[in-house]
Image 1: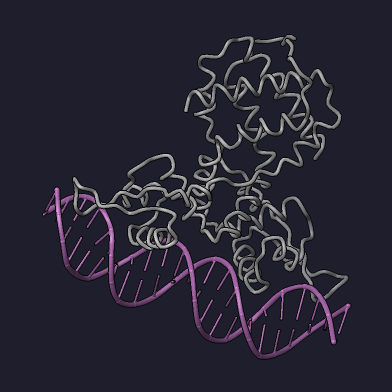
Image 2: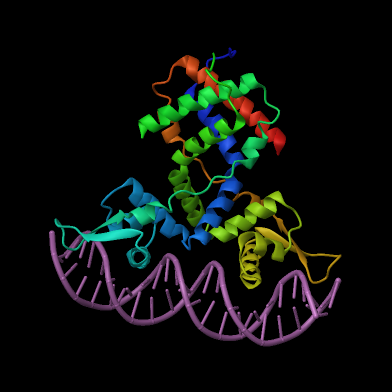
Length: 149
Length: 149
DNA sequence: TATTGTTATACTCTATAACTATA
DNA sequence: TATAGTTATAGAGTATAACAATA
């Protein structure tokens, strides 16, 4: 296996983006479906995603991240708390503020189902050697990604 | 380069999904940002995506695809037509119906910016040999995907 | 009679403004 | 005085119901 030139990280990023773009509209459709099925607005879902990655978020922090007003954030969090998808706990260091955290129930809604039909179809005419190399490469990429998180 | 076992398409799909999942919340954030900047609702954006892939859509077809009511569809399309993002043309074969099509202006809003910072960072400690193989593999994948579209 | 819309109206989500409580 | 958040109210997006035009 060889390439004629030196491969740079930027070249791979560009390649990944081209592949990713191919799935873009499919992903939007899957996301919209996921939101509808679970009765979530896009902003509600975004809140779940943010508090998943960052514990003890404040309401104002979430509002800033999502470019929403504090009042809208109150409304959104109220709904999520009512549904048991996030918790609102008093901040002991600042009695004006609250910690927003994901519940187990909320965590269940994080994953948007993938639709890989199109991807699978593209393998139909692929050589076994190519499949092996692709699998190996993606495995390396996956390990690097998970390590860097 | 070798693998201990026979790689199946399903194994790669699974691997791709794991990688894709890693970018999921980042993508949701980028999408929300794109929608806000361009003053689009998720459903408006979904309509642009659908009419991009399928010409001469009817309103009812779009409503079914997005699980929206016909009345909501009328409202959404009215807005998009006013902004010049889609055209509504009479269907000569059925005078009740209209063809909805993407305009050039609408096509400009299809692409959601990618954020590959995280991806690029994961290459920092990668061997040149691994970069080469990854690039080659993704190139093959990309070609297969574009061909199958 | 069924289908493709549209119009009118109610409900949900977000913004604005005024406010309370705490820093 | 400034900041975190809430409450009340108005505007935008979607659902429901009733309707018009065409198949």
